[in-house]
Length: 236
Image 1: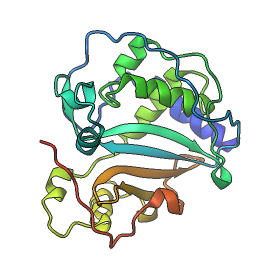
Image 2: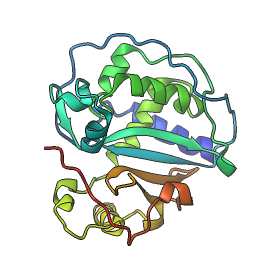
Image 3: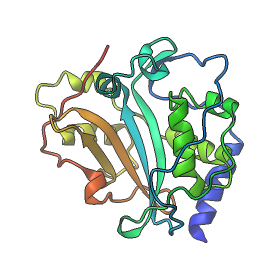
Image 4: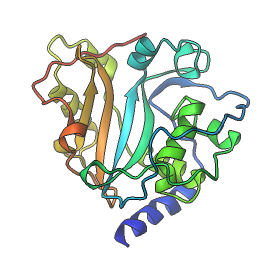
């Protein structure tokens, strides 16, 4: 009940806040319209498991665009903007790795709702996927899921990755230090990092408890130790 109350409070605050939600964008111009997409097909079983916490995953766009080869997309083309950290998704987590997923096929987000969130997550298909796989297990409507995601997103400040990328001795710990300096309410053990095998930054994962307070990440979400060397692709 406490978890539901915490989610409801965030949802109520979000519904009362019409401000657009932005990624760490160097610039962002919304397209005039977004075409309706096909329904997302589940990539795993339906799981209506209890929620024990949440992970907010923020992708580092320059690295994604370098590795994906998807140069024509909104996220990578530069036509609608240039992006730094973008919201990959807000994910409910369950105990022992049994995360809730694919809880409902409908309702689907409207093209207009997807459009309004493209400066936070500049990938229409990804927005639809995140709602279907994760959001449908947290909220009754995609509007509530994306607005709660936006509340959390707007509460965060992101490090200057361009500046950090120029440090010859950059480590995962220094990236965590930079995040903590900007977000003093956070704890080191709640800041996860995803890097490639060749040590390039891919994502930051922020771990929350059931009440949306920073919480210790499990080993998989925490990622490399503080002493691990790290590189950041600037892409500009």
